[in-house]
Length: 363
Ligand code: NAD
Image (spheres, rainbow, N blue to C red):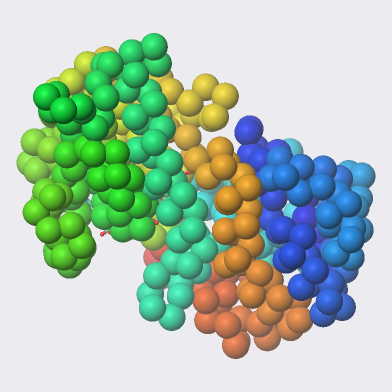
């Protein structure tokens, strides 16, 4: 199969869909890989690195998009919609629940669109989201601690405190992959941590891991209000797969937070859980203030660490890309149930239930 890898064009997105090692594994099986020039540069992979693994370097995005299958990192932007065709397989993060225009464009073109984020593993987990959620979770607290500094506009509190000075408080809403990785870093920095989730088993597991060093609470409106009002950092790490994130933190709750505290809405790529996180930001200008509280709402947080992210992403996408390349969509999906669950659009139809329901289709 001919496989295209265009350069990512989203603001400050330095990841690339595949490492040279990934390319080598594809070309060794007889596939042709066309990579747009400098696509890997931001992640530290040069054109020569890819060429030495058998890739063809192409000068324009258009040349990569001409392939039978395009592998990407982020959802296509409006300027890329013109490349959609009915004989194209697009394998990437799509987050369609939050992207009605993109969904329409793919539907109209009858492009086969396979979304990493809806692919479900044998254990019921989300293997393509997992590594990026690990990264976003770990970054969230690191970034928030940075913005808590006075020169960055924050309250001027050191999250871990010092001997004789109480540590700060981190509240994490959602205790899945990103939430638990945020927890790990928050504990590492010496913060006092409260974690909320609607699933009791998550709270049980956190207690098993951390004992009484972490306060766990079931997630509801009352507990959220209580847990964030004295927090220095609040991390939103909620996911309902394929759906828009629920607005769990109202404007009124944010008004009650301490001045100079920091919100990181990791779930902003699904619409966000904070009513006040009404702007999606970029790495260029990541933070804004509402009611004295700093809001960090970058939808592609792992883009800040493209080297780590690109390798971590290739680790999980490659086996499925190989299946697609070797067998084509239909046969690959028959054998690979994880891949099957990622098909969001096929022949002009929405084929993912949660995404379809978001757009008002009934089952
Ligand atoms: P996950 O499925 O591992 O965890 C989500 C958790 O939210 C689950 O434990 C679930 O029980 C919990 N939850 C659901 N409803 C809740 C509620 N009402 N209150 C509290 N908890 C609730 O998901 P994840 O992998 O951690 O991803 C979280 C979000 O982060 C997703 O929207 C994902 O797309 C996003 N994400 C964003 C970035 C970024 O750069 N901004 C990067 C990676 C992931």
